[in-house]
Each structure stands twice: as structure tokens, then as C-alpha cells.
Length: 71
Image (cartoon, rainbow, N blue to C red):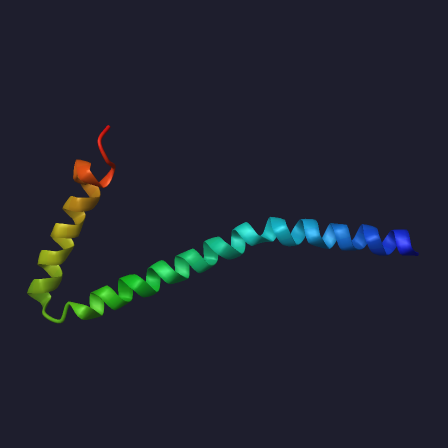
């Protein structure tokens, strides 16, 4: 019976570690969504939202070279 307990304990530990990736990905998604919501609510006026969206879109599409260091 002790061998079965050890085997089950190892099995549970293996699947716990394997499940961590999914848990961290879900937390990452939740955290990013909350940060986006916080930033969006900080932009009170529609004009500010449009201006900031275009500014951030440009940073995403064409990031400055300084973000990645000297290549």
C-alpha cells in the first residue's frame, strides 16, 4: 500500500506542475485585462481615448529601437 501512496503522490505532483502553465496563463490574461480596463477608464474624454489609442498602436506596430537595446 505504501508503494501505491508514493505512486499516487508522484502522479499528483506531476500533473500539478503540468497544470501550473495553464493557471499562470489564465492569471496573465486576467491581469492584462484588468490593466487595460484601468488605463481605459483613466482616459475620460472620447478625444483622449482616440489619441491615446493611435499613440499606443504606433508604439505596438513600430516600437522605438531603444526598447530593444542596440542591435
